[in-house]
Image (cartoon, rainbow, N blue to C red):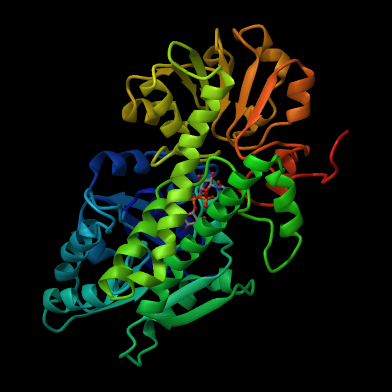
Length: 474
Ligand code: UDX
């Protein structure tokens, strides 16, 4: 068992709150710090301020065990522990492609002058390469005389919807430290903190700051590229009547390619992939290697093009123009098992349809409230059936299991026309057709049978349904 350690987690948003609860779950004594008093009091009361399966249980269990507390005061953090994880947000800047580091900088500025003795800050946020080196210089100026504060970078790879699982059972751990410092103190500390995880044999990559920072953005850029690759191929499939899902299965059997992240559809969204590829391009420009990542512009463009292609497909499905039609949009979150609507393809499509004069009713099992804040003028329904009342077309925009398993008969009597548009290629096209619906899928025809979400869960994957059979039905 891991020997108890005291540590703090600065920033209790999506990443930080999960990290704090999971570190307490490993047996450590954890103090979560956030400048948002409301967030702190909700977490302290055992309430997770966003939807993340399983997190509330871990949070409550560890609050009750006395291993976890939350505060708004950095002085508490400086006094509580000598190891501090940094998990604040690094959003895209308002203008341009760069990354807004103000939260990271203000956390460092608040904590560093307060600590006494030897402390270690372990950055987890996704940052442009060179950030740790710059922060370290900033810290040198702020550190109290006679004290020492080291900085390490250990990027986080968790997926929303699987945050607890990904934190406690990661694919790998990465630790980057100052390349000019021979000291292995950070490595010893991390080894101690993650002992239970490391004992399972998970790969532990030891490197320098810059490599660690680049690992994270490269991983996300690769995933984004994989999705845009298959979506680009789907544009060709659309034109020639080929089935991109079957194609993905066939190329995915090649272990060098792999089937995961090859689901064509509305493309990627969320708080990470879109912003990370843009931040990566911006930094590449700054370090004089802009040419190297020019292809990511195309990855981004392919991705956003899917959204307008979807709007065109819906227009085709209702006879050419959505003006004056009723459209039900099922799903608003950027992916299932999440209430996150940041850069959500689903919500973007709903907004575009409304701009074109459709009367749009949105339903998402978890993201209605967040969506309403972003798009207050759309109508929000309490159920899929309610959203579909008098609809001229039903659009599936997020592949929640409840939509994947919707019975065509259930909606048949409430809609005005039996028209369904599958934006995630997640429905059983044959079942809808045989129930008398006109079926449209983004990315070209669908001939295969989607796999059940049970199989997807067992696969421990947040990806879209894969295909159970590659046979083409008669
Ligand atoms: C991502 C990375 O996966 C994770 O490792 C990193 O730490 C943070 O960014 P996340 O943003 O939670 O995680 O979502 P992810 O599961 O990667 O999905 C991203 C988007 O891609 C979603 O909108 C999803 O619907 C879409 N997607 C995913 C596809 O369109 N096709 C696929 O095959 C897979």
